[in-house]
Image (cartoon, rainbow, N blue to C red):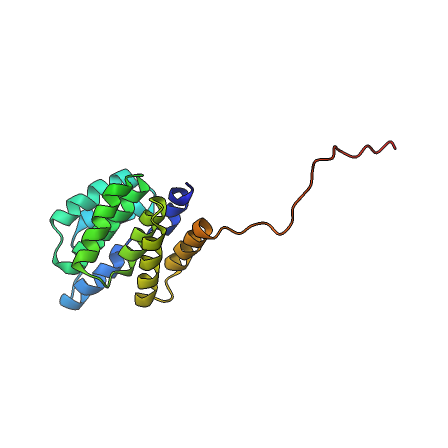
Length: 172
């Protein structure tokens, strides 16, 4: 299935700059991310290095401080395992993220991709709908919805080319 090929562009990875906003509110001087492994893991995933991204994110999950870092780690692990083609493991981390917070649109987006890969289209549709309720303008969710529609309602061509005849001979 082509889902995994497009997924590198679509997985909803939580960039660490979103987490830095929380840190800035709590302190006056910031020298770098609080959770270096989590930040490096997110960067590796965004660069397409899923293996290293998962490894670093697992390390960052162990030292995650607070629910927001933990949610980022779980969602990113879902995305990373999906990119590695380990959809069952990806589903485990998506489910963990959503068990802890039902307001994580990125986890819904990632889990919808996993469901599409597993051909669980009704579950994928439910996740897309829920994700769009939380973040109606999320570009990734719109693309995932398009991928779902491509799988469930493929567009048939309007023009059919009849090439049963051989090539036209110009000498006639």
